[in-house]
Amino acid sequence: MARLEKENMHVKTATFIKSGTKPSHYPEGDQPEIAFAGRSNVGKSSLINVLVNRKSLVRTSSTPGRTQLINFFDVNGTFTLVDLPGYGFAKVPLAVKKEWGPMMETYLSRRPNLKGVVLIIDVRRTPGEEDLQMLSWLRAYGITPIIVITKCDKVSKNERAKQLEAISGVLGVARGELCCFSALSREGVEGVWARIEALLP
Image 1 (cartoon, rainbow, N blue to C red):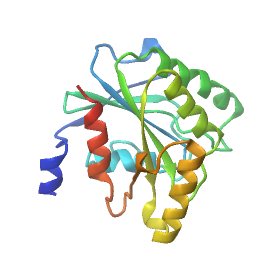
Image 2 (cartoon, one colour; image 1 turned 45 degrees about the vertical axis):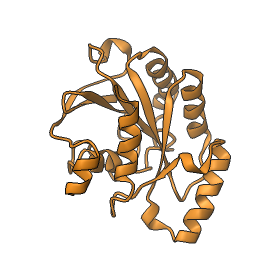
Image 3 (cartoon, rainbow, N blue to C red; image 1 turned 90 degrees about the vertical axis):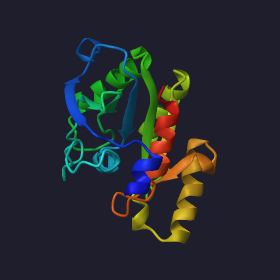
Image 4 (cartoon, one colour; image 1 turned 180 degrees about the horizontal axis):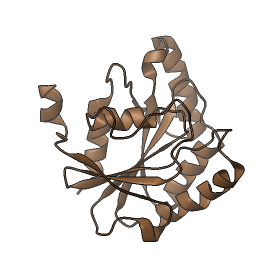
């Protein structure tokens, strides 16, 4: 643990600021933001909680699709972590699904202090339409993606290699751009933090 704190950001405080759905709801000020996006059952909450070393900063749920708001969290008083609504889960009402696209694009296109987006993909899944849409938006608005592959402890080394090759092909990115992560073993924590810190002023 000491090594982790020495090499990466030591999270002293992580606190909830507010939730919202449109620009008038966003926190004021120009503190840099790093957002997290992914399918509603991809392990986004677990990733965030492990990164900030908190058990329940972001609530995990056995019912995917719970987060329908954009949630803002202050980290160390130096940057804002933004938890974007999960996407792609069948049981979310159609009306909510229709709101997801405009809400996401508005945030991505109109938030000047957004420095990067952690795009989260389950190692056992092939990236879907919403994943590709998110990556397309990031490219269109010049936002740096940090692509994190979660649940890497759930597959064998051979299966992981095969899946990483498939995922990089579908996303159209180099294999080296994918950062492997496991909430269980904490694999990848240092790598994800290094990529986040590289985007912060």
